Image 1 (cartoon, helix red, strand yellow):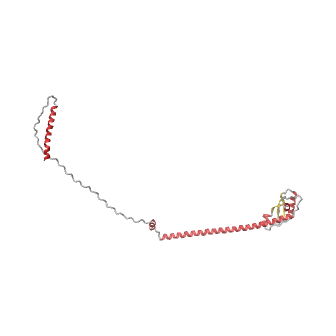
Image 2 (cartoon, rainbow, N blue to C red):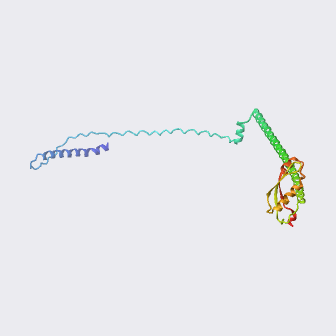
Image 3 (tube, rainbow, N blue to C red):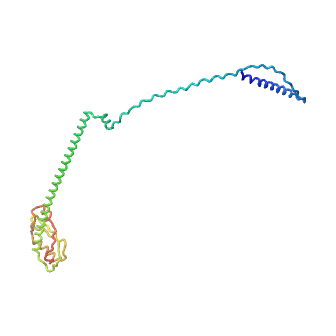
Length: 247
């Protein structure tokens, strides 16, 4: 109540002042030069009404925000210790008894095939060695035969030359370094069939004396082996160069 009474007097004074201001404004608008009269305000019957100020509604209590329930912690799963890859694979792919038997059979067949191939290689090497040995023996025998044949041929050639030299009569015009070559043909019994001069010594008397020495022999000793005779004595070259001319 004390608060309402303190507001009443100022309110009445303010109301009277506003009324005077309005009246003065209305008289001043008439445009005359009359002196404004001071109007004494009349008593205003004012009735005081007590108006209680509206009471502010009490603030509604603020409800605390509901907090979301915390999720329950997940149980920690214990991981099993990692097994070695070899053990895990062995457990997952352990061979059966049938697979083991098949693997053993395949391994046995592989070893047998390898052994067979080894035997075949050894046999082939043995055959090659036998062939090589036989060829070597044949070649050695042939070489021995060739050597023997060559010795026989050389022996018969030396006999022919010695016989011609014995039948030769040296002409007076013969000189050291003279030689003549003839081609001689024989028959298998060794008789002289023909004699022809191939390379002359340059001295006609020397050439005639050499040819007569060959013909006087008439027959030479030749090998009985027909192969040797055909290869070496059927037709051969005779180089006449007597040793006494070299002295």
